[in-house]
Amino acid sequence: MYKTSPKSLVLAGAFSVATLLSVSSNATIVEFETSQGNFKINLHDQTTPKTVENFLKYINDGDFNNTVVHRLVPNFIMQAGGFEFNGNFPLTAIDVDSSVKNEPLYSNVRATIAMAKIANSPNSATSQWFINYKDNSAILDRQNGGFTVFGEVIEGMDNIDKIAQLPICQSIPMPDYTNEQCANSNFVPADENFVTIRTVTISNSSTTTAESLSPVKNTLLNQGSSSSDSDGDGGGSLSYFALLALSLVGLRRKMKIS
Image (cartoon, rainbow, N blue to C red; front, side, top):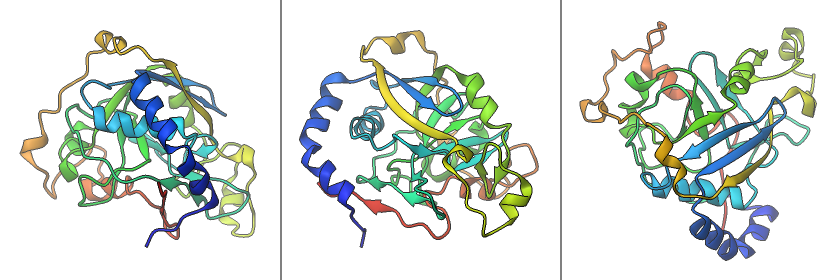
């Protein structure tokens, strides 16, 4: 059974308003303001409509505000959209809506945003998303029904690249954090030790901006995946797929009620 929270009760009252906003605005470009610089993403609202509608609802509900980048694998992916830092470890899982149907039309090439999901469950994506640091199509276009790419970074990819240069503690990018602090289980980090996504807002609600994009089609989906798949860096596909699972050890996903 999923847990609820006071936040979910408040959001439930605003559900109808948020739904109307997501349907009427049909936003294409969204801007992320983070503690490490901003970036913009152009959404494929016409070709991955269910995924974009789901993503926009989280934005309209304010669910992504003050979340943190909770997983980073250099030269692979940066993942967020699932957890907050409230002064203590483990991180706090945000409330989530029902899962969304998979729409694996486009390829997981560099600078694309896609939905994370549970292993062996193609239609399990909820709130968590990731950005591809390189062309990961050989792995992510085939595994688990393919990972749904629903937008492209059009501005600020340099800031996303800089995040990959930060110290990493337990897969979390942590500014101004040392190896000694990471190894000390009694040391509690502060807000400034996380890459915080302060706000995510709609910056252009036009539905025509996608015409300037040239998304790469997913041509590998029907080929399936095998145990011999590799990302080219010596890591097996299964280990990398596990990095995109929806939950961290010891954290429980919470379901919003509506």
